[in-house]
Length: 218
Image (cartoon, rainbow, N blue to C red):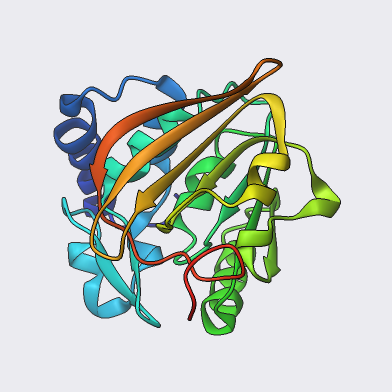
């Protein structure tokens, strides 16, 4: 970024090399995007110096910005090439959408919390992420008007993957979401083929609850 203090670029490089590359993330598009997106702008001013740490951070409204490695892992699992239209459920801080925006044609992001929705839309405009389209809605219902999507990423955990999201995933597309109970989940990737749905368990994780008609009750 222009006119940013050099320390942030240095912290980003360290984050990518020490937290992400060393743990096996090797997709060049993911690494390039995470070296570029100014993560410190997606947290509160009080937490700026912690923005590149190896842990999640609170962003208000009971939500968090995920640990950098988890962002990288989930993004790599989508196996993006650059032409895709991606649906994100749970805009939150906006960081995940910003990473995706560096990699794909267009990002559609849904947020159910109005405060987060408004502040994140303002940030996207400030940073000129013009290929991110946002919506204030129940993300568990997806975005039928814009379906099908080449990839779907859900940044909150539910007991199961919402049926509307599976229906809105294009054949050949991939969906990644944490699935489990209130306390812990397994990161599940679905691949939609002509023969059906192929699930893969990517291991344990912990996310905030996916709230909505096809998720947890508020």
